[in-house]
Image (cartoon, rainbow, N blue to C red; front, top):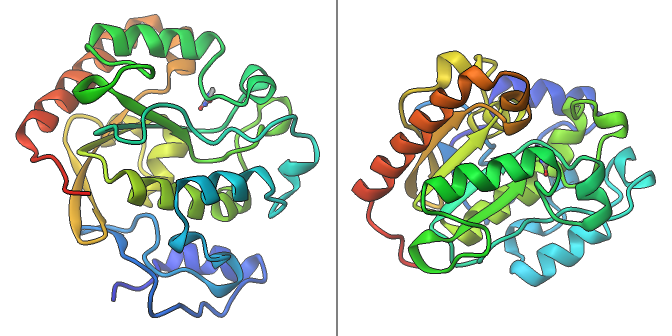
Length: 247
Ligand code: URA
């Protein structure tokens, strides 16, 4: 079994959650060749999440009090889209509008994301091969739209890991630094991670991960739209070359 990467192990220790004990039955979601979402789950963080189905997982997120973000939230923001989607998009954390509506990417950045998806023949309300499932690394809104703190990411990450395992997507697109770093377990910049397919191991299957800029960044840097389009084209190419997963 792959062990927890040292950076994450140190973080968990600082949070008072070490030593890191693991359950033998914890299913594998490990990166192929690099650190990523941890394959081993500390007992203090496990909460049975890796055995939950979609509905129980969503209910558990709705009642989660694992970090301070629960105090100010209006709604948790679990995810949107068909649970049969073969595409998965991962963002950072809900903003004000998402917190009010309980759905990811419904503000200005979300409208831009919807246009990018539409241009790629995809959509959150679509079905079949055009369907996408969209989730965030963190399910509650950080105050004043600050970046999630590392401990908030660590406490919320098991939910995302389980969503990835349940969906078993054919391709994952991570948007922005927080999502890229959480999914791939790296400190590298978006610029250096773009342009090729990374791989994470999802319960024994190697799933391609494409890194792109966050739509909120694009709103401030319109000139980089072409790069995001190139990333979506790469994701499409990788998707077309990848066999559908058996669920
Ligand atoms: N930004 C994100 O990363 N996620 C959302 O849901 C909204 C804005």
